[in-house]
Amino acid sequence: MRGGRVGDRLLHLWTWLVIVWLSSPIAVMILFGFNDKKSKSNTTWQGFTLRWYGELFDIDDLTTALTNSLVIAVVSTAVTVVIGTMLGLALGRHRFRGKGVTNFLVFAAISTPELVMGASLLSLFVSGNVPRDSVTIIIAHVLFSLSFVVVTVRARVVGLDPSLEEAARDLGASAWGTFRQVTLPSILPGVLAGAMLSFALSIDDYVVTSFVNGSTVTFPLWIVGAVKTGIPPQVNVMGTLIFGIGVLIAIGNAVAARRRT
Amino acid sequence: MRRLTPYLLALPGWMWLAIFLVVPMAAMASVSLQTGNAIDGYAMTFAVSNYTDALGRYSTQLVRSLVYGGLATAAMLVIGYPVAYWIAFRGGRRKSVYLFLLLLPFFVSFVLRTISWNFLLADNGILFGTLKSWGVLPADFHVLATTVAVVGGLTYNFLPFMILPIYVALERVDPRVVEAAQDLYATRTAAFRRVVLPLSLPGVFAGVLMTFVPATADPINAAILGGTANTMIGNIIQTEYLTNLNYPTASALSFTLMAVLLVGIFVYARALGTENVLEAAAR
Image (tube, rainbow over all chains, first blue to last red; front, side, top):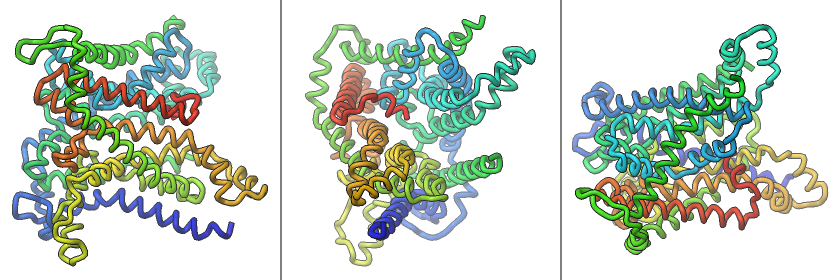
């Protein structure tokens, strides 16, 4: 293996180069949230300021867009988690007619390009004269997140020992009691992972949302709309704060998971 | 009652998928064969000419999308495989830290990441502007609005989706298998080529599938990094649907895109001899 040492070093270096490359736009985003820009554009560095953190909510449309995104993400995550967990339980635990078709639909929902999904939903809404607003956005977001919740819950259910539930029933627990006290706690990590994923997918989506939004504007839509006139530094600040919160939650999760084991 | 349980559990999800995935596809298929306009309404005329017209007008963008998607996927494979390999076999106890660092970009919105690239690559931005003022680059050097910028942006944005499945496949490879090959006098290269590489192919397949499809259909990179000369099919579909309200043409284009991607996936699966496409992709 001695000949491999140089190769290993090169691979190690390569891995770090890729990590730096992947992180560089994040560094730029954080940096330009502190840019003391004088002109309209925010593309050259003009000095350090904390001003934009103070004026974070001064652009009304942007604040509305961010609020819309958060509300839509919370509602669609809640809906997705409930029906996704139910479907995941059915597919992971039970045998029933139509199971094969359902599995195929779940896979199809993951592999359809977002663009085609958005376009087909728009075709449906246009054909049916359905007005497009937050409701149609939530419908779309539930659709593309659903499969991810189903897959994570199903994986968890399959790994579960059915004799635990049988034991609970033998000890006189009702069906609902068994679910609440035995099944749910053991599949909870899968449900939570699915919930986090669907929240992240919802808050980040541009492509599908752009087809079904009507006049409702979400955070990503607002940003794309503002590209031509110039992205205000507040966008960078919001991005930085969301990034920070996300990283903190992820690290907290990892630490908690390590304690438990 | 117990026999009904699975049906009751599956019903809401099943209905959601049927009403909002299957019916819309049928609606799109129907719209793609209609004639009319946004003001007078549309009527079903089985106008197959929508397809020939759309393809005649936008074949350049369709081919360009497939080429860009293919180039980006190839670049991701070349860049990502060594990373997945190193973390899986040499990552040791820090494996999860490396994976976390690779996933860091996903804590920032896709759109914002692409715009930050735009900042970074701007003609007089912090990178090229500085290099130009040092005289390292000629004053007329630029990357934005070129093929390199779009393919680079796609490569950047989807790279982790290539690395993760390959990592999962490599992680499952028992290092003792590699040692056995070397005990049997295989060189390092031969052991990699004959043992590790074939075992990692399901991961490569899943990675290619997870990156090629979204990269080919992505409208954001081309819109933000590409300028007017690098329009991709995603931008055309968006414009036809949302600005021109030309629903028949837009539907025909969407359907064609999906069909081409499906054929591509099928041919690729056959060429690679992968038995179970669904299983590899679902992992």
